[in-house]
Amino acid sequence: MNDKELSVIAVDDDAGVISFLKRAFGGAGAFAAFPAAEDFLASAELERCDMVFVDINIPGGQDGISLTRHIKSVAPQCDVVVITGDATLDNAMAAIKAGAYDFLTKPFSYDQLEAAVDRCVEKRAISSELKHIKAAQEELSAAYSQLKSSERMKEAFISVIGHELRTPLAKIMGGVQLLGDAREEDRPGLLDAVLSGARDLHETLESLMLYAETSKEPAPKNCSAVDLNQVAVSVAEELAQKAAAAGVTLTVTGTPGKAEVQGEPEWIRNAIKRLALNAVVFNKKGGRAELIVKDEPAYVSVTVADSGIGIPSELLSSIGNPFYQIAGYLTRKTGGLGLGLAIVKRVAEAHKGDDPVKSETGRGTEFTVRFGKAGGCAA
Image 1 (tube, rainbow, N blue to C red):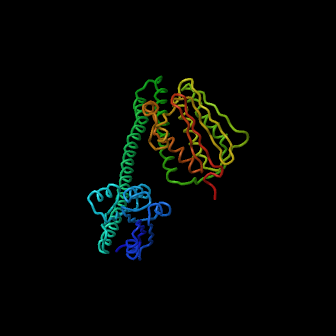
Image 2: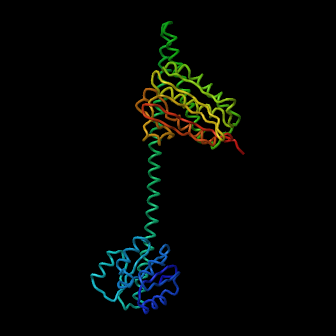
Image 3: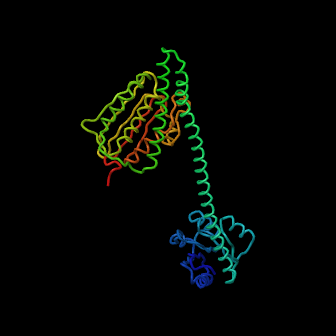
């Protein structure tokens, strides 16, 4: 009998049956016997129990059927075998309906007991194997979903890259082709178009290079002291013309003294610039955008708050996914790879920080990027 690892409990007021079961399960991992339902309910430890043998007619206020039902409700891992001297079809059906795994008729032989135990052990082994198979299937399903997600990301990458490269190239090539035959008074406008296309192309390539660099490197290589007050002012100055053209007021609120972290200066500046650029681009005419620097005990943070379109709450969890653009219908007007927030997230993580966001549709967004003071440069 395969009982060496089993924990077995018997509930029966028949001393002969209990004695027989004790001998039969002498090699079991554990065996306990109770003469009445009340003793079993008061003292039985079911957490590690594998099998319970229950007599249908036992003293203690509950019969074996109701006790079986109780056992399966509190310890579903226990397999219950109902034993009885009154072997009727009704009793057998009632036992099975209550959750019993098997049914033994008194008096039963050692061979009959062994057969019942072996069936139970085999069933438990099959059940365990099925759980492993199910877990393996779930892992395969998750891996397949991840693969499909990667394929969709690749398709999105190709589509977005194609658009973002073709658009500035069209400006450059169209302007260059027209310059040869253009009238002198038309040349400045054509040159502006060529330069605009070149700047857009440069920005696209810079985004790709920075995303690749922050993906490849777990921590910044070139670390130095970075004053986030200065970075915020520098970013605001760079974007001042774009903000004015969009009708957005862009301001900076610094913190007293220096707000220094140890980090990669270009990574940090790029992250803050991308948040500020979003605050300008996805705003409304007459709106505001503010860069707020705070010096906290463990972090220095930069919050970029705007009065723009906001982000629906159901989309907040997708922020930071590469090539994902929250407002797809708007980004067709503004362009962009959808890498900005992914870069911000990677830069924050590389500097032992994070990038929480608060937003309300139609009322604006607050992105806060926090940099650990030791950054990614700690030994």
